[in-house]
Image 1 (cartoon, rainbow, N blue to C red):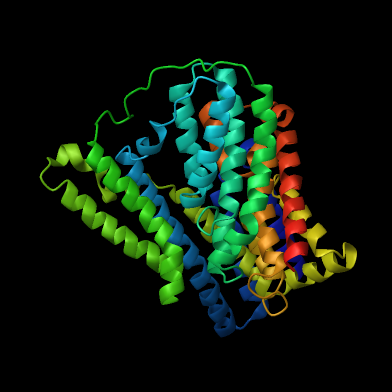
Image 2: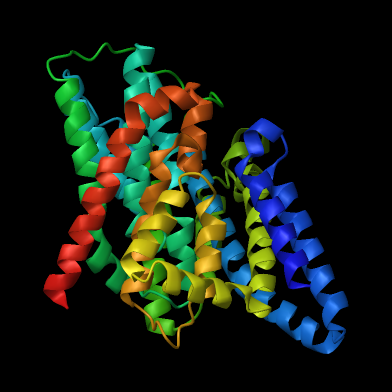
Length: 427
């Protein structure tokens, strides 16, 4: 049974990693893997009651992550429908490319911590397409935006899916992850940003005029401000909600989504249905990336079988015996996340190491949040932000390898060095 489970998982993992050449959506591979793994496990064990209990337990943990992401994605879509991000983007004005690079890098870094790295990348690259006329300039900006978005997401419990998974799983707490990972994340962004800004020094911004929003309907400044600040306020309040009530984060997001829905309906109650249709929460729900949510369900349930059969615990023991050093193991996981999806990597790590041996806010979990979050920037296919940038700006894989991968790798090791030095000093 164990051999069959490992073979199925490895084949599925390969299919997920090779999603683009195979032209098979990774959600399909993840769902088939989950179905096959649980089927093999159930038939081999022959104890329906135990398998049912374990599946129910795994599903509960998975559902919490999926409901959280669904709520957060819907909030972001509503803000975007109201052109809410113009509150930030219309303030970005400078004539030097290097100055604009610094400005965009820091805005992306902090926006990613509040929204998430994928949404922030889409918002910022869309902005650059409106601001910059030259495609060559936009490519460099896209590369830096990917690095800044992944770095910004790593230190926030709501900024990156992998950090969110660790937070919801109880491996990290919101205040501890912010305090311990913000400086390493900043280093992983500032080093590549500084090098790129130096390369672009002296060059002028070749600007293009801002265009109308894609749906062609303008919202008032009051509506934009209300939905932007309320949307961001809800997301920022979720960690505080969890701390005060001790309820799971998805409950805070759903509560906030309800409030935002009510405010949106009241804000547009006097408008014609035809005009307000694209501004409603119902429309936002239809625009969220359901394929990604289904992928998380599939991959987390697939990894759960390896956890229940103790395959991951055995792998952790083998790594400890072979490599020996926890910091090196986590660094390797981060680099591997540039090649394969970091969601199953982190899910597997959560199953490999028990919280009895490695309690909440242990070195392992904090360093894993940093490495898995920022390691994906090394290759453009290594993160959702990179894949989004690839599609939006038609970035070639090998252009990214030549121009950006080296910068991201230097930043990755700079941030890791900062974390390790910081950990030695504080502990």
